[in-house]
Length: 310
Image (cartoon, rainbow, N blue to C red):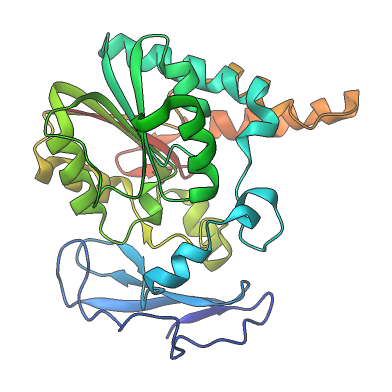
């Protein structure tokens, strides 16, 4: 029995014309052993997610059609004028740079130089930090943000996806997918393509929620990661399986993130107006420390960053 999460009525059922045909098998392992999990109807339109009882992969089923998904990523997605929106990095670049720079230093510990591809690069803010050591490239689906990134990096920014890019095999030393893989219908194919694009010894960074984390399990269908643009919900076990299948020689996991607590606190100062706002640091610190509680695929929070080395 699928659990219904009733917050705001959706009004559009999965039988509507905005969805693809329902999948009868798991997109990750091709098993037919899939079970209904949740109906998420706090958004307009609502959607359903299933879980594969074989590999544990959670995915939207049926998925929105590509034409519907494309409409999610216009200017309203970045300006906060829709129910489904994203943080506009331009407004907080000074603060976000604390995280970006520290992350680049961590990557630099593993890979010293070369070409750097950020998949889902938005306005190109992270690439500003990356260009300290690397030649920056990006892939961006949204024309709204692509125009800005292209104005900075020119033809190094591709408007499109990993399915239609112009880049050649073994072009990059580093590829990052930060809060991106959950937007893709076929994570395995995406990681395979990243592996093909990486040079030997290259690094792939994936940041996404670990659905085996206690945070996701306790919150169930109310977990904030269940949103219209997210098609794939991976566990740590799923990520390890995908990277292994694609041939990555070394896999490193960071709980909750790879850049530590201090940069996170500095980034959070965006929007602070009074001294009282700094009390949020208590919550952020406790969450960060809770993320250190882990055993195997289990973790107390669902934040996870993965490095795969080719």
